[in-house]
Amino acid sequence: MSSEEAKLANLRCHVKSTNWVYCCGYTEATHRGALIHLLRSEHRNQVVSRLWSRAPTTQEIRAGEIGCRSVVTQREVSLARGVRADLVIKFSTDEGQRAILCEFKVDDVKGEMDEQLRRLECSWRSKHCGLNSAFVVFALGGAEFWQSRPWQCCGSFVQVGVQEMLGLLPPDPRSKLLAEYEKALKDEIVRRKIAATSLSKEEKCGLGYRGRDLWYALYNKVREAMDPSYAKQWRIYTGGNNAAFNWWPSYSQPADVARTASGAFYVELNNGQLCFKFHWCGAEGTRENVKCLKTAALNVLPDGWSATQTRLKKRPQKFTTLAKQPFGLSDPEGAAKRLQELVSTKFPTLCAQIRRKAFV
Figure (cartoon, rainbow, N blue to C red):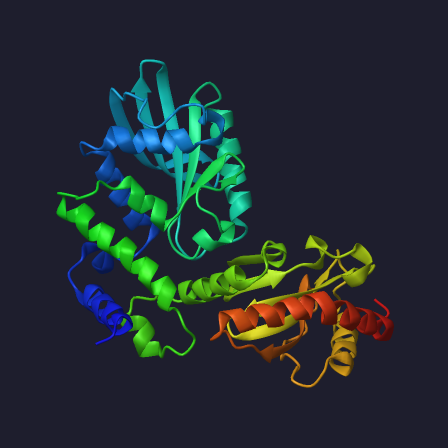
């Protein structure tokens, strides 16, 4: 048995085991429960110190310098109407009371994650303006790839990914709960490495894939294979119905390449489909405009692109998929080269041709 086959066999065995993480589900609530359990152990000072030392406003404090006299955790803390913090860690030191506001994300987020985190921070500061606070988002599934780098800051939030979460655990957990949680986190790293479009539905289920997490891992492989100048122009996020990986021309191109008075063109990967799309400004996305633009795009785009079967709505659209084509991700390096070529050479020409035909 090869090392790769051994990894797959071990992963299948772990997923079928009585590990409490797989029994409860690899969810935000599961990760929050594991962290609370860790904060109630003898390792709480090290955990709090490490999280606090990473906060953007407190980087002058080194890990290990905080002596916590008491640590209190509160779940689902209401901050404002429709705004709740997943977890708040309050602790007392010789310098006074402090708090760490924690948000947990796995794979799916409704709306923009950055906007959610900003609302959380603003709501917390308005309610606890005098409290010395730090902010941490635990991105422990596909959400980790949206920010793309460990310990990266989003506003005042610092991001903790799977590898960083493993670093918060004790080297040899005596607690069975923490030991099984550590195994589940290591399984998540293996799943990312072996992610492939060739896996059948049964194989995905047997290996513990949750759905969109496989696509996020594949997108990240492609982004890592790109030249750095291109990689930073591509964004991974959750769309309304699927995992998305898109490129906006405003990241690197002059505004007149893809922008028009009615909106802007861009490209996006939706699972295994490469989509040529348009973002409408204001109320410009009327049924007539959408139909005209889609017709112009199909007349210009080369063979291989096909029309999308979308129902034209009465109210103006915000985003329109003009055409799509299958796009293989089995070879991340090859996919990266093809995407780079598309956005650097073909995209500007296609946009100009469509603009001339559609008059948008």
